[in-house]
Length: 525
Image: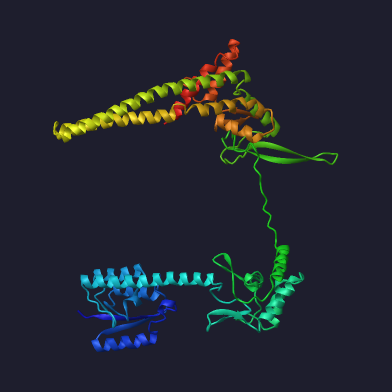
């Protein structure tokens, strides 16, 4: 088979390529290798880009051309010239597997297109990637150590120069006095950033294009802590050991001027009204929102009134619902809430009943838990006797395994029942007491101006079932059925209605306790 090769040479400006031959040297060596081994080169490809990450255009084009059959071999100085990342290396090996690529030639690396050769090639690619990764870690560690020593990594700012001999940053004796003057000028408060740029331009400090420095460059210089002896690295400020150009006092004066001149961005905040998000429109089911409208009186006083209304966002329906004053809506919601308020005369008897129920539950659960513990201990003894009988060879293995499984199953059931009863025997009492307190506080809340508290109560009692229709806040439908109760609030309302009919203020409170237990059992998984 006639073998045709691409000659590929690559070198980047990254640190890891400092010891690699230059492009010219690689080309000389590769051409000599091709001549000595009689390799037919159809094209020489040169790329000056790092191979740490995929995406080299010339390398990618070379692989495409190989797939199209223009060549079936690559001549390169070393495998790390082809790939230093897992994707590019995998592409080369995949082309070898698919026989699009028949051969690789390296003057410094032996390769044969066999399973062992591809294995060794993958190791070479892996070593190249490991070298880059390890070098990156070492470089970052070196930079962190440099920062700890008080030396800023990177290019020196204006007024300083990088000393390549000592690998440190020193003061530029010609430009540093001009930078100091720039700080002093701006600290006076009557100079703009453009004025500072023009001043430096008059002293021949310009951009590479010969133009004055831009305003953002001047701002960056005047706010750089490097000039008073500190420096920023990785979003953090460190103490530097370089020589300061300006005093900290002068630097602070410049920052004060910046603070005075900085445009204060004021964002208009639209504070939502307290009852927004609670009701829906009774006609189009859109949410109800609110607007505050000023009204200017003849005596010069301006009063503000809040109106709640449908958002009318449904374009297909023309909503006829009018708006309603906030005070009227507040009054309607208070009336709705008062129907679910727990009377004060019911509070103490209910708390007494809850306490009695708690005591009974503790006694009942305590008896069961004690009996369960006794049974568990007996089962443990049976397990031990069963094991002894098996070890003494008094019973067969099959019988032993069967009885053991039965005893362990019974023991586990008792342990689970005991644990659940210990945790959940009185689990309903705490939320019950909390609900009693909340229900009893409804009257106090409805008499106050706390609209947020009223909103929270309405959401707890009605959920998302409140609508606003013809200027009237109301539930979507009347819920009078409570067997079993859908929630305890409906049970409370029904109990109050029945007590009012019977003329007894407390006749239905036992029903409330039972209803609450049923309700919680319904909610619990």
